Length: 302
Image 1 (cartoon, rainbow, N blue to C red):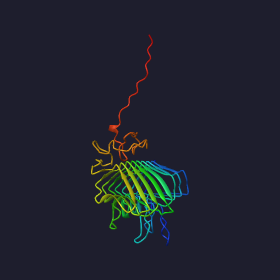
Image 2: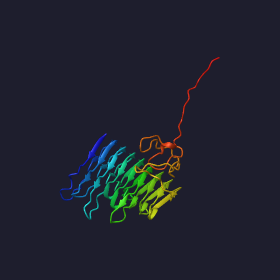
Image 3: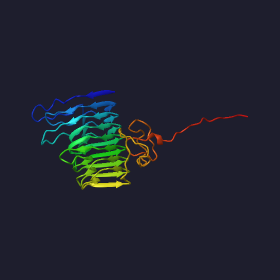
Image 4: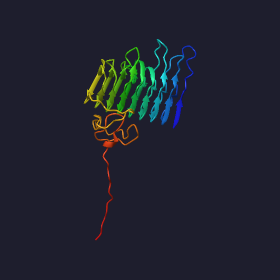
């Protein structure tokens, strides 16, 4: 494992340039794996318009980002600029991305405090904790940018979104913010709690289909926007009972409440996940996984 910390992208000193990727920058490289790193206290250039405070990936098909701690990174934006995307991660123009078992916490950006996914991208996101991130404009947890011809598609399963917040612009205190057309999301077995809105789909040309989500303490509503939102079998008004590390405590209504989908096999800690009636969220409450005992076959002759 590696620690990538206290870096600042040097670009942006000259007029018109953008400071990409404070920590790790992947460009035009397929089948890359970024795993088991601590990526923290990095900054996409504060001198111009930073993109991807912790990690930036562009034109990187089949990139896997697995089991990293991505924390206290900043994608800085100048006042009045259109940049500052993805405090923890910024992912663009990359297909078949795999984002699994990461802790994405306390990152800051203009758009997408935790992460931002942009045009011509597809991804699967499983077993992540996205918490306490900050956006001063849109998408405290996640923000999406696309268009009708530059689409984004994503599958999100067994993630936990908690208390991602906003600045004075007021639109960021959402777990997930989709702010234009061309985004199609499928969300299954996720916890979304302690936001203004859980998920916002602003444009009618985008959609989100949710199954077995656990919503709690989203003060203005669990979902909002003119986009198409289908919300099946939601659990609402019940405290998920998370500990200080965003893991399920005894008695959580998330336990045994998930939709059976047969994957992922592991939870955020790399522990075996129950596949039949799984727990909702990134953590699988291990005390409720039945113990299986296998006895050897004994043959006796007379």
